[in-house]
Image (cartoon, rainbow, N blue to C red):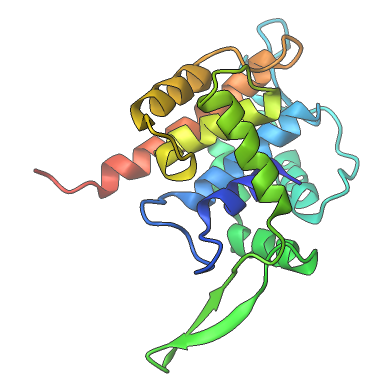
Length: 225
């Protein structure tokens, strides 16, 4: 499972087959998840101060196939963007229908079910209800272990929590008698050192780029009060 796939399963209603209320900037979040995953796999990095050229720029370290079509497509896109800032890659990584491609892949593996229908018998709509919830249940159990019971996250769980925090949906995903505690714990993890030392700088840069990409559209679409 990709981090992006875990994210999709968490924010999609298992019965309705569509995002739960309050989910915004989903495509940006999924693109960010791909970027972070490729950094964790050592496929992409950010240039340090010691590199020739400017620090904090994208560098592809390994462009061999990663074994997942969507991830390989993201790697190909990043190969054309070396020398750019990580935040510049978020938009291009969304491509055409990133969420649809990930959802279709989950359906092909029997995790989701594709249902075609129409709204008011006129407008076509595709829903993706759960078919096999075992992966999602494992992810939710891990989030509960970390955010409710206070245990330390692994790198993938830390990345997922950072993305959920950026989207503002942690308490919609993790049920608790004390949602305030869950939200504070998630924020601490999102801002903390959850990545291993070897990849910390790269993942921190990637996560920061995702947060910028999520934050700016929120500002632009928030009505004046």
